[in-house]
Amino acid sequence: MVSEFFRMSTNEQIKHFNDYNLDEQYELFIFGNQVVHPPAIYLADLLAEQGPGIIPFLTAKLQATQDEITIRDIMTVFEYMAQRKVYDFTQDTELITLMEQRVNKMDGLWKGTALEMLSNIRSMR
Image (cartoon, rainbow, N blue to C red; front, top):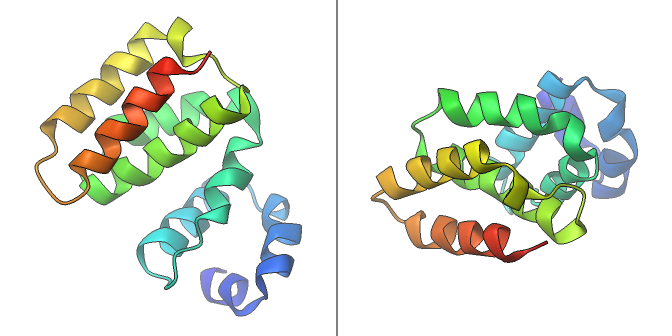
């Protein structure tokens, strides 16, 4: 599934992304941002467009990972959701706390980026 998806043009990927279930979309997103070069960052926006319904799924993924690149990628989707105003993170203190915990434990290259995203998420209403 992954290899055939990334053989498509970017326009075709965007067109067909929603044909996949959420688990598959997440797998494509992670692969596209951690393996594909240049990264398929546009997939974060496609996930974000789905709105509040994906919050429990992404929260569970964030809870389950210690991988800093995966934390960065999930934070990217959350930041896009905040920018699009499809979810008010300021009202979800449990999720904000989880994000803070994950980001504050980071010590690698992506910590600064993740801290900036967290700040942006907190400030958007």
